Image (cartoon, rainbow, N blue to C red; front, top):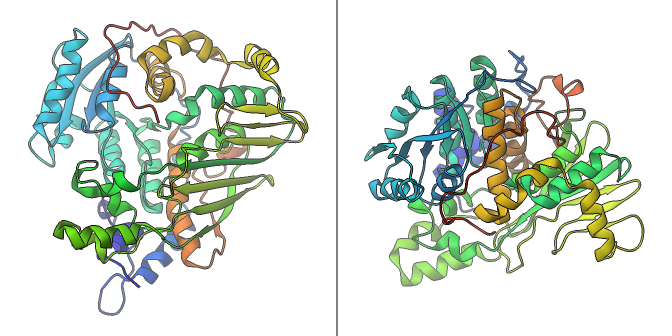
Length: 487
């Protein structure tokens, strides 16, 4: 079987923050990490007890009248985030960091366009981000870097007295997920995973409908990340040092959170229910290895990838909750299919589904027609969309959901109220990836899902979609939007 050493260490939990915490790498008698021992360590880590130090669910950190933000990673997602935050009142962008000085210059250009002062620059070194985290002029560290850096940067930010907001996934190993939880609890600093899909207009609509009992008892939900990224993953100019192609050398549900986050909120996972166990199955890889071989025949650069194994085209992961609900998550970023997150909510009295577009809702055998859908939207559109939705569409970011996410994060910090997504959500939604890797490698056997709340899920309150607190942060669009993604 084709393999590589980096894959072993990543699965075992010894990359990034795993090194700092003495990860769970397993070795054979010669001290060499093997794939079998690395996978075994996933199950060991998943079953380890971690007593709760402090419950971060519902925690309201001290108010920040002005939120001073430092951005790390301004290559891909970073510019759009800087653009969005530049339109939110009560925000100061005080620091910009990227190992490439040209990216920092790009970020400064966005601030200049919005009439904002230059931020302090951190660049020219792989360790420059640590200086940003240590800066007394930063309250929130906003992380837009490759996956393997999310946990070490989030942990360092919290240890430095800063709140952390990281792109998805927040962790790539079980140990990293626990490290995020333990650090957030100990420092009482927020660690939010920037799961923008929780703020999609249709996802928010169905969440509000579920809260008000429209679907009855929710029994089954589905989410996915189906996005044809085959050419992007192999393009030399898409991801620095081909990092995302390297991530695809693991086999499981590698990017579960976009589909998973919204349906977990519908089910009140971590807040009234919890994941019990999961099982996962992948197809073979029918395209990535083939493309690597074909590219290597023409360009020696790709020879390093031609000997690797890749995750299967389609992964399907099933989760059962303690209260007997089912969650299905799918992952396919290779097959030539239209983009889809599925987003299906099925209850005893109704059903909703987003993809294909437009979203549809039903109470029986037939979907509601256009007029009926408009009536439902008028009745159930949550307050956050009514308050900020139109401005979010103007600023953009996947149709506006990115802006809603950023606005809500800032509004919570400025009002001293609990975040919609806490560190337990970041850890749980991310940990599905390594757990699915174990299940795939073990003939789809089930594996228990860690309870990052340590039992607090029984009393934690559901996410507030009524905007009963906060909603006071203003928006001022200062320049034409740019740098935003649509899909």
